[in-house]
Length: 266
Image (cartoon, rainbow, N blue to C red):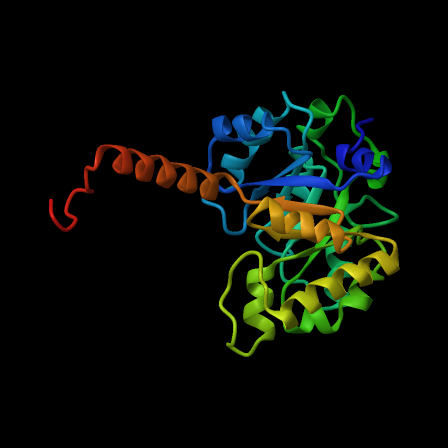
């Protein structure tokens, strides 16, 4: 039976560092998995990939001691169960607004009598060296809190049996709770939004479950750990690539004095 690395990290009293994968590439997943993260999340919701892209990425990550998580596109049983069967040890489900929706999602995660998951761990049995109904104790169900309704119902969502953690999406939370006042983005500083984020963390801890936050920079993630977050995502493959490419180009142009093609003075 497999063990969940995230649970081991938390059992040791440490916060977990999560990375984000949006590019459909086993090689990118392999590079990120070798970077020292505790977990990596493959984004099937907004990432540029589907199941056929996800599967080889999970295989590439197996060489590193990293916990594979998948954010599914929606609260739909087929993709939740298929991602678990492919070897994911945690599922992040977006747009959870009510306790009823949380309970439905939680039911997809576990075998009877605790849930409605169908048995057929085709790759998971290979990836984890065996896989039985004991998986009920290892897999992690994260409900995303990212809407006004979800924030209003966060206590009931957090108290739902089978929900192991909450995951905060700050961009949608900003859009959904500010009546158009705030733009989406990472690492918010708006006082009201930060208060909501801290409230979600406090609720999760009071209910005895874990809580994660999507961050853009390590400094903000470190602050979030101080607020009580158990897991922080620090950027991801596409954003890291874009930032590194821009920084490299900017440095070259500064050192050579050569302007970009088509820019003023060229």
